[in-house]
View (cartoon, rainbow, N blue to C red):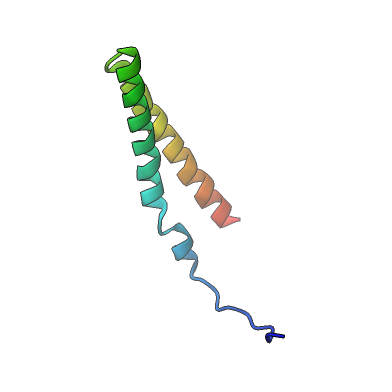
Length: 72
């Protein structure tokens, strides 16, 4: 049986290192989705604008949620 060893603690900053990429990914996902819906329903540029707003809102929500869970 393997000895019971503890891994070295991870610096807390590394838990949030990818947060910018996650924020960008959320926004890009919404932009591509709502751009596709704009093409499908011929509503340019209204759905794309809604996608930008929703993507930014969900991105900010994700950042707040991740940083608040980190502080607990």
